[in-house]
Length: 409
Ligand code: MLT
Image 1: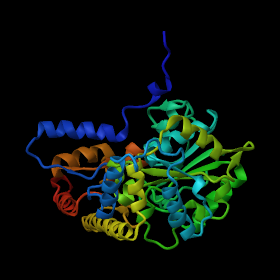
Image 2: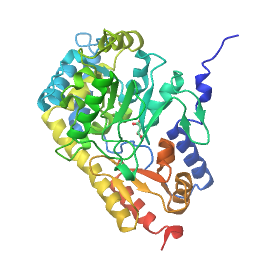
Image 3: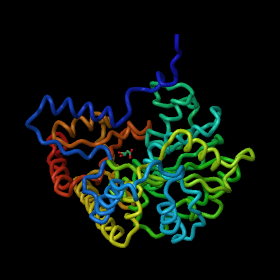
Image 4: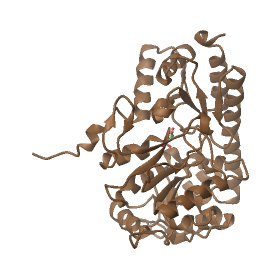
């Protein structure tokens, strides 16, 4: 009889956004006349920018002619895309990253979830609490997180770094020494960031301990503050301790197109082995490349027109963030994030759990958000709203929230 991977059985419930999707669908079935506004999952609503759809069309036409047809992509991705990324995202910011340290993929979620495979099962992971659930769940599937404790909502072998209003949602160096440190900056879900000085502390710590930082920079396009780095490689010493994940989903609206990349400097070694070579082996074995047409679309993100159009798109979402932030503040909520990130993190009214607030918001305002407890025990009592909706829906959602009968003072 075949034995299954029992680590999967230890996972509590379904993936956070699947649970929310099921709850919302059930509600819609029961209330077909209600118009629901979804500010839950961080999925974009603005169409792909014209410079990018143009590149997509051109690439599709190339695929239809034998002279310009493309089959399998090169293992690490097309040179034209890796070169432009190295130039625009790294050299332009003073980072010494070469094109062959960049691995093109179908998105940051896959890479964040898969990277743990190149590390031993015994490695201890450290995560912020609250945290993007993929980091913990993917390690749980691999058997690295110990046992799940129902009453605390914690895994026995995970090192949690609480991020609460008390520490301004900035993680502190853990007491126990981790092997792998997940940092998401700007942060999902709290919307906070780390300044250069704050990030330098982590880089020095990881180098000193021999740990590896898994740095998720999917939201870097939303950074507005000058002292916040866009890449961990802006910090001296990061090339010997960090792997960075980037996405085209949030800066260019590729959630349905799928494209991302991972940077592993060749100088990053553990136990005398270059992690770059392990990931190259894994990538070559398990992945056949992002589609040519999508990689062409990715290159168009860096064209002059592309950059101008995407700047407008980011500004559009940040206007939503401001609308949510100021609207909720006016309504008396304690609100965080929304300045360097497309997420707003709010404190739920006294005496309510995050899931109770989720139900209340859905019933009374027809608005969907994400309960903070879904991101970890320290997310309890908080709630996340995304700025990725349309402006009209966002403004209406906030007006509805202001009028919620049960929250009226
Ligand atoms: C989120 O809502 O946290 C994100 O959309 C999830 C993701 O990017 O995978």
